[in-house]
Image (cartoon, rainbow, N blue to C red):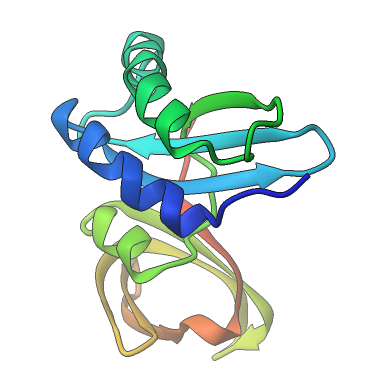
Length: 151
């Protein structure tokens, strides 16, 4: 199936998201299932009601954009999820001041895992306030960075 680029879809739908107080973080095509998933976020989190409202709000603009050139597809709207890995600088900026966990490919300064409060992300360096003080970890050495989920 031929589809339009996700950048074009995000550009078209970002104003719709902003009208609802949301940030459209990412659009992802799954060609196996002919589905488009739109990931949104907002301060305080996202619930089913806001996802439903967003889904209805983007129907018209998506019909006009025709992202599949007339072919059928399934539209999914989702929150980012608490365990979604950080991939971009925006992901880090969105979670500044929150507890995160950092998994590494290989030991860095004696460990493959760190957790602490995210205090900065600059020039590819994660700055973390840990129980043992400040730690600076290069993002390119990480296998996964995400929110620390405490139970």
